[in-house]
Amino acid sequence: MRYCLRGRTWGYPGNCQFSTYTQCLMMVSGTDVYCKMNPTYAFQRHGWGPR
Image (spheres, rainbow, N blue to C red):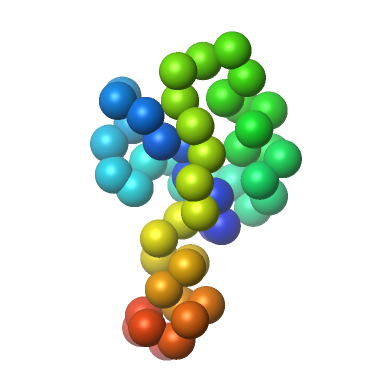
């Protein structure tokens, strides 16, 4: 999936079950976590990861 929940309780890379940023944002509303792009997806997108 493209986006991950990140924060103290999630570790790295976090909970990466979200295909859209909006889905991720709905889960973080009112919490101390945040959304970031899944690093695996980001590397593959730029041709740096495994294919």
